[in-house]
Image 1 (cartoon, helix red, strand yellow):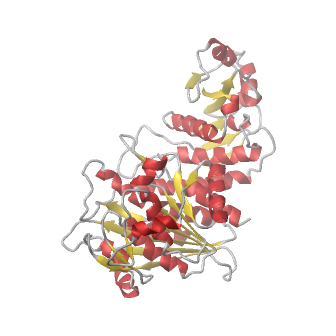
Image 2: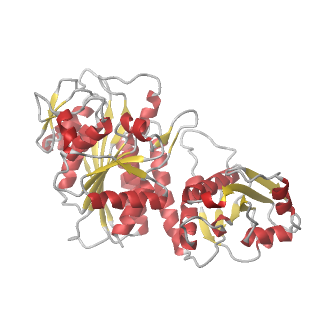
Image 3: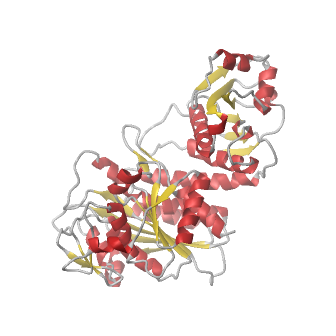
Length: 490
């Protein structure tokens, strides 16, 4: 979908649809006011009568307004002006664009960036609207026909001041990265297995001269001593892979930023088998991998002047006669031994080997992303990702990037007090620390394999997908990661 800036007479715009918004007790302004004037005040009269309503999220379509060339005008209620901030703005853009996907409209003019949004200037509104629109046009089609959805060809944005059209190219790249992560998350596990992720990484590498791909197969990882990862993989017919995507946007001497994404393409729980109800959603256990691939793609398309490595340990966790068991002791790539108390705490086992491997790259920063613990969902729900780090500066940089993009995280402690919960009489570490502070002890476990590095952990178990009948991957935290990396690039 192409995006551009709109200029000209809104009433005579050669477009299929126009999107306008109205705030409670606030007169129409800008293009919306001019549109209302052209149609003889029909829109304002409907607002005043209550027929359109001002409740946030309420959308009404008006057809063939007099004096307006566009076939349809979408009017969205935005609620009270003082409450209209970034998240409400993003939601309004997404919902109105998605509404038009189910109409014959192919070309749209969106005037929402003209409206005042708390703490956002004209350029920031255009940027956020561009990303939200790209997210909205994603529809899962791989294994399901969607004949009722035609798609949008082009969206033009009206703005209330000076804004660089180049922001839209950046927004498109980030939106495509989010949608890449969503598609990988939504794909069924019989399609999206470790080798499928390898193919996707190869496709990205093939499109960018500055990108190289390395894949470690099971024999190579066995030789290297990645015993924790290989233990998780033992019960699956699909062989594990370690995907290493490298982007060189700066001098080779510049230390890379490293992203590590948990890639459990299906998690049965292994011998510690999960309950059957909801197990289908365990295809989403690779959303950490999906997000670091999506973020990597966006960085490569943006051409950021940094070096970046995305590491994806891609594995299935399945029960089998050869599966690892509770009570087993495995040796990690870092040399530490781990007592397995629960085979459903497998994500930290594949991540610890990937983190130790990433440490060897002497990274400027290293961030792992994982759907790691149900405890994080209990703690934070589905609104925020959990963030843990010993580095206050890195933690605040990630938190601020998330706030700026509406992809929020919340910091949890990593105090030494929690380490004793991981003590084992038979190994250097146990892979679980009990029910109490489950998210934190998982983070503490990972921190033992990232010592001496500026490292942070993002637990996205609550934010990576939406459950239920309309389940869908969210693509989080691609926007947070890309914004962090944009800032590192200056």
